Structures are given as structure tokens and as C-alpha cells.
Length: 193
Image (cartoon, rainbow, N blue to C red):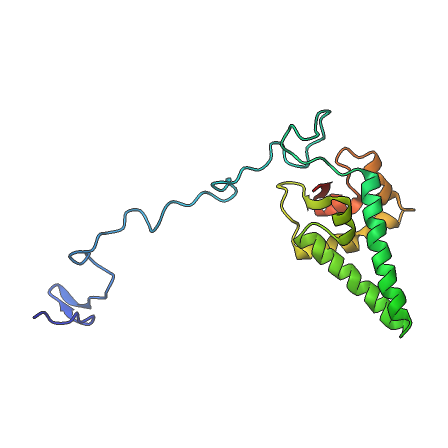
């Protein structure tokens, strides 16, 4: 019968206790070679099984962009406007219903709708208006969703689109990536779903 391993046993070389896991490997156990598990890819390198679109979503749209290149087509300005009008109508309807109770409650309802639509933009890429119009918001670099925080931030950044006489909302008409000022700051594009 063998004695249990005593972690505080004295070694023949001196008075230092032998701690488990240190020293030569115990019989029957293999020594790990070069660390534990498979080697991990370096930070910033593409992950296995994921290939970002060639050129990213942010590259200028070539003349034959509509589907053959593997990248989704950027949404047209008119489609974006109709989606925004649908979302605006939902917000106004909520505020009108709440205004029957209190004007403060109506303003709060408008803020809640803005936050919810920002959250939906970040997590699913679509608000009700964008869903009806078949468009979605994605990150320019890799085509993923923005995330809740960036989606809400993008909603508030639309203030910058409205300030210079609505110039930011018109910017997609001539911009090569069809981005508003808020899109440029956040790094998002609006594409066909």
C-alpha cells in the first residue's frame, strides 16, 4: 500500500517542501508540450471559418456592385427616407397617445422610442421602418451589427445630421458610401437586407 502524497514532505536535497505540480512529472502523467491547448491566432488575425468581405463594406461601390461581388448593395437614399418616415410615424403616434395623459409623459415616450429604435439598430440592424423597406445597418469594416451602445449613440448623433439645415441627411445623395454624418462617426453603412 502506498502512502498518500504529503505536500510538506522533506526532500532528500534539503528542507524545502515539495509542492504538487512542481518538479518532475509524476509517473503516468505526460508533460505538456509548449502550453495548454491548440495555438491561438494572433490578435487581429482572421478567425478560422470567418472571411470578411473582400474590400469590406466601406470600399467605394464599383459599377457592377449589385450582387456579383458578394457584398450587399448599399441602400438608396429614398429607401432610407421612407424607412425613417415610418419610424417617425410610430414615434409620433406613441407621443400623441401619451400626450392625452401628460405632455411630460409624451416627451418621455419619444425618448423611450428613440432608445428602443437605437437598441434595435445596434442589435438587429433594423427598426420597424427599415424592416418594412428591407434595409439594415451594419458596421462598415466587417458587416457585423453595431452593438447596442453604438446603435443608441448613432441615434443621438443624428442631431449632427439635422443641425446644418439637414445637410447630414442629404449627404448620402453624393457620398460614395451613402453615409450620413452619424454613419461616418460610428462607422456604419446602410445596406439592403
